[in-house]
Image (tube, rainbow over all chains, first blue to last red; front, top):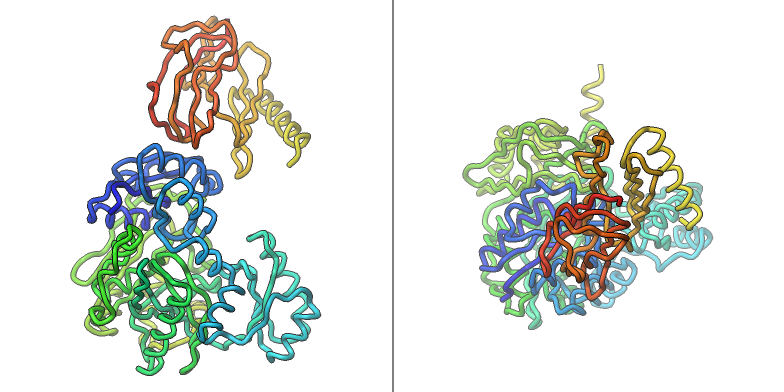
Length: 453
Length: 149
């Protein structure tokens, strides 16, 4: 097992990893930016290093300073958390070059899954169902030909994309030229790679993903699926739950099997997630995330296992401590992301100082958060303040428990998503379950109509 | 950004600093940080701290408002720009050491690279905040120096 782990992240996930490491008897080293000096993740670690000023390019993405901090503190491994350097294959290689274990999959796996077109080709070869689509499209002409072959509506996507950037829905040939140019420019600006490909648009799909965990001995298990269909217009998730409601046993079993064959196809040896679009009984592979995800606590609560501890253990060369049979889901779990955002203003990020923070607790409620009263929320980073997870014997109980927990949540100083999450818990469509990713945009529309005189 | 543009930006930062009566002015961007420092009773001096520079300069609080008493020298805190191990250069300076001219006070060893920390001119060391061989983080104070002869 590792002796000392450097956590190359901030906020709640840095604290989550810090806890897992301490439970395993591993000393921790935190890194922070000048804007995060007063952050809880710094206080909880055994040691810490400032690695740069606020902007991420000079701090949380400052590879030389991060590696140097690991080396001078005597760390033997680096956990990247999610975001920042978590899916940076070059960083994983640099860690290895300096004798540091990167807690995650092999660099080649990160690289191949990070390129959406390559990932899709690998998955298709492993008989994983993928959305009908094209290879990289060199020109608008090729895009027009491809779209007429696939049939409208289609989706243009950036091969280096993520977070909804470089993505355009196209319903008619007339829209295509403009959409192609703007998606290309957006991808170029965000990822320095403007290459686009096209997929058939699955109308109002559900977003269902499967958690997997593998070790370096070739063992792989799935830890069930999560339904993440409550998404902001930017395709960022807001509420996640497990198991996915109203999914036939046949489809559920198919999803799990497909995820396992996908993981085996890339000899996956860490925690990862396969994201699918589901429509009726059809499931289509969308992408693989080669990191621990924000919403991993949903699966942890459902299965009663610690995914981060296991991820660290397998990175240290240990065997998976579970087999598929030992993983049994119990009840239902829901997570709400409490972000510093203005829900009424298209979820625009809010910065400021938290003047009051009271977070919920009690039976079946878990809170992962770095927020405290007095904390200044810097403008440089992700807006996530807290993840509230409610577990119940049934989906209804989990929803009621979440509703009550949100009622016990008091955050002042910045706008948050507490109220919108509460509206969602009380919404009839949400309570029925099984809706598509158009749920939240249409809910916002309904609320806006209801609020207007 | 090319060199001409960088220098142009340093120049306008220096002019702004002087016209606004500031002693220190800093712009921090992803790729470039420009810091301009104006010593009282001296010509404006400018320092562009790119990613490759080892130190950042900052006026010490007591002189930051430019209201130092006549005869008092401006104090500057030299800070680490790299995460690494600090190695004091020999002969090692201590509080009270007088420097006749610019010299290397230490270097920060980071990933095998020596990043020098220089006094930037003559002066008197008023404080040393680190020990030889100590690990330092970004922005950690290393020396305080009162510049001038």
